[in-house]
Image (cartoon, rainbow, N blue to C red; front, side, top):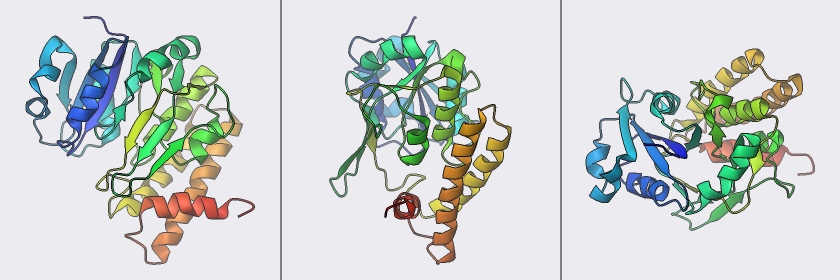
Length: 277
């Protein structure tokens, strides 16, 4: 069966949200898409999906070798099974707007990689925060990928990054996006192609040990940057941003804030340190 897009979805303790995520892919307008769902836990996701989502051979289920192998490992296992040449990312607690893929595919055909606005939805507070480039236009700059501290979920030609996601503990999506932008030469942004990022208060960035894992992940990234095949200005940009984030995390930990959220330590810290604040 031929598909326009393979959507890569890692899942760990996502029984309450997986139906929403998969349904948002299979109901995409004017696009034939499959979901390659990689379980990183012991849940039977096939049994959790409604019968109508299991029909038609559009959902492929796989597993990591051991639970909690991590989202990068799960994504890369799924990537190896993907049947399309265009790859999209979707976390198991998030969802696509109905026409997201149809809006993005022309830009992917032209540039190689594209994304749209990220709508961060906090069900507890009812707040919605939207991430898009700081300057209007049809391109997502590398500085915005790194500095906005919001995820941008890519849709890309798999030939741009055949090895997939770097296997690091934190912010692997940011490093993938930098890899893709460098390989493509630019990163297309399409207004209206929304990604619904549902804040999960049990997620990695919200968990009680998030700061310790962020610290470990940032150290991995700073080591990785040195050997990445990026232009020197890109390497310097990524090193600066993650160096700032590491400093904010270490400051929170030193102040006894082991249970401070990653959001407070990094996003608010970055805003506080910005010139003019």
